[in-house]
Image 1 (cartoon, rainbow, N blue to C red):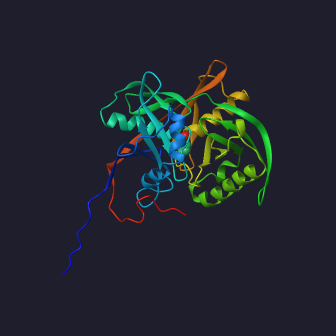
Image 2: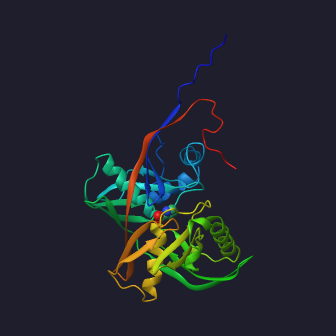
Length: 318
Ligand code: PYC
């Protein structure tokens, strides 16, 4: 009788998983090829191009999933940084990721590589300053945020005219006000449909961020019991289980521009599943510099492996 002998793994990628306010982050520690590029922005481009198969291995099913955001740790180029990081999800690389940075800092602390205090981290869109607090919370002083366009109206099939602001918080957002009572996890299918239609309509109407950048995050924002709650649709169509660090930063930039939030004033941002970030901002060189605070927990550590002949080594792709 011929016996099946399992093949040994040909590739191994070491990772640690965490979640921040419910949103998962997979920090990739070893086993990923080194990406070409003189800057993290160039390396991000390489990841979205020639190295896309590796994104699939880590982030797509069957080893990953649509909700997951991965954080590839790379050597920092900027002085004084403990790490560089390139974030990516089920459709491509991201600019910044607030929940992912909180997850990365929590992971580096779990590994014993950093302790409480302030740590600089380089991302493709700039250096952020993360402070690990004694209680395990992490505050991320994000890249400067700004509102690029106020009160943009777009005609959305099935929804009619939708008005909102275009804002940068490390990624590009369209933020529109909705009735907060609908921002509940029971309604995520409908919220996803609405947000996806808005994103398509913005694209069709040629509404972009600065320099023609695609608006790939849609934020539906409303009040629940006097507290701000959001539903954020990410590129790739998964919704953020956390209140979205870059989305909260973009929201804060709009509030600051409207004079509705003072520097240093505390802003509580809830996610659609009811988890919270705290935010605030200060003015730095005439720009809004948001800080977002949240908590992550490590959920798993291990190695992704690939056996020879696996038809889904590089992920299940459409
Ligand atoms: O927390 O900034 C964030 C984020 C972006 C996409 C998913 N989470």
